[in-house]
Image (cartoon, rainbow, N blue to C red; front, top):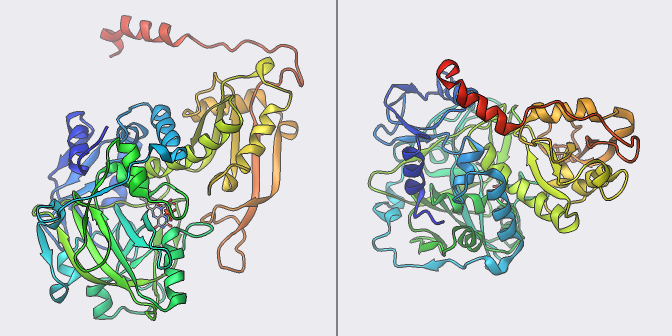
Length: 499
Ligand SMILES: Cc1cc2nc3c(=O)[nH]c(=O)nc-3n(C[C@H](O)[C@H](O)[C@H](O)COP(=O)(O)O)c2cc1C
């Protein structure tokens, strides 16, 4: 399954009724914007993706803004040609674990590349006019999201592709009363490096370049084939090429074109490309407020800036905006699929009885087993699985604050069902583990901050919600529940009355 570009994926969504054009005026100005409320409404109603064609208070009228395209597990699975989230997750995890299935990208002639149809040279750059700005919620700046960021390791030359947010500094509100220079506002961008524990890969490239006193070139490609985005937000091993992983996910190589002012390559079918350079002696900027993925505003963040050297885009480009806020929100599921895939592939290698790992938008980890009760390989098996999650390979398992293990009859995507299991199969004292030595999720505002200014350690709760046979009972009351096929049959029978 390979989409040529984001547009092809969007047309599949539109044909399926999952993407709508919105011509009503929507305000995107600082403080009076309607975009955060729109995100909440779309998620309360399980709503579609939208293309906002008539933004008000917008600096680039005529450039439509894509909003909430990935907002359900189904739409995220559709990136990989699936609808079922588990099928998509297993595909992702399988390709992630086996680099023989990756496909190296190919560099093609850039002359007719869609991403180079319009060129803005360095001397003409004025970001206030050329890049769309949308403010969301109470955020102090207009962020660039939906862009993958390409850099090369200054020591080895190995490429990294990551999905990181960028901050635009034009008309940005300063969180501590400072201001931004005209040059910062119109010719520079800031990037969310250093965030991800232990450090994201662009952060490692930047730290190396700084130590060597060298500039670091960067290329930002906005709105590519969605498989490229999925690859870019997956934690692949440092030094490996996410474009090659994306080739594996797509089943065919990603086509790249060379940038013009930096020695980097970007997907030919991107909507936008921004080329730039981080100078080793440039000062970092302070920005804020920033709304984060656990649902709180960070008052301020300090990030590096780069000089923009060139912008290219399509003739009729599309932009994308999003906000992280109290979950769920647009790209929750897209960001979570790699987390689920990472933990699932590691657990399945060691514990064949693991069927699925679901991470909720609020980051509770639910592990579903294929067995329960007497079929469990040994008493206390649920607790063994809890420890395995905290010890899983990759960045995420170790930061799982709440983990619940359930049997095969509990739908891990349905929190009401998970609550049923906790309420009827758990004795809190006996069936839970309180781990006092966990690694905190770095954004958790309830964990004490360490000397670095953010939390590194915190406590964790594991709940074994399996049926306690044989460890406590020899049999258990049967569940009183209707058969799903019989429910569907009665719904069909009464559809004229009940709708
Ligand atoms: C929409 C979206 C925005 C993200 N923004 C950031 C970000 O600003 N900084 C960051 O470190 N990770 C961010 N992430 C998570 C990273 O993309 C993810 O951890 C990825 O593995 C990082 O790549 P790396 O391992 O090559 O550094 C974001 C993910 C998504 C889906």
